Image 1 (cartoon, rainbow, N blue to C red):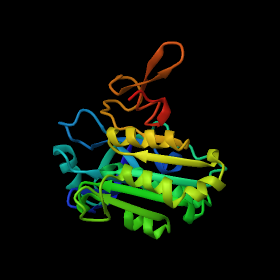
Image 2 (cartoon, rainbow, N blue to C red):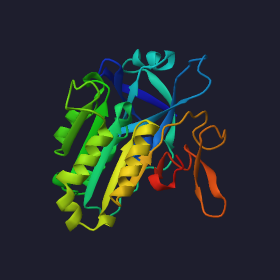
Image 3 (cartoon, rainbow, N blue to C red):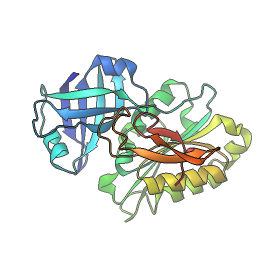
Image 4 (spheres, rainbow, N blue to C red):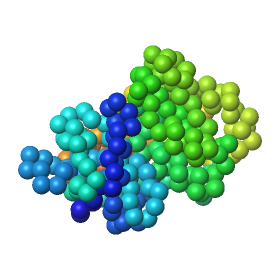
Length: 270
């Protein structure tokens, strides 16, 4: 379908935020889902590219957060208000938010922050207390830290790490997650039933693996949004298969686009 651009602005040296008018997608979208997009009338772009639904603030439009890494995203960064994208979506299965959830920890690395703002907004609207909602984000340097201003406006607890120490604590965000669970909210974990606590994570696979292990140690449910190359976005091309556990065979394959991109972290064979 055709989605008109309302705005397209740079939010970091390499990342842009695009607001698109498309009520059909906005009405159906859930946190963690994605769209497949390509520039309209671009004859060189045969295949669409996947982008997480970054945020939804009103019933008529949604946001994408994307990093300029090649000629397609570079071309997207050059689009203006009134231009259009050819969009397919919403696609995939998003995050599961239990009705009795009392404490949530969101972890992202770099551009992995893209689906987290929509999830944060949904959790706040779902009446989760801001004091029990944590947003942890990390990157190599401060220029790659995203979404913290918007998270601050939502009133949630924010923790930042950078590998070079240019913003927040120096180190990796999985290390901050471990410290947080061990020290800052240990008392809360003792008082809240563990089935009412969840970790949600998005970012590069090495980070997701570490977050998964931490969730297992603390016996906390963990949902992860996997990154994968996708050609179709709805399960036909089989290009985004991921190995998961299966009782009878030991393993099987699922498709990130149609079975995910969100999975229970304990389901993945790393």
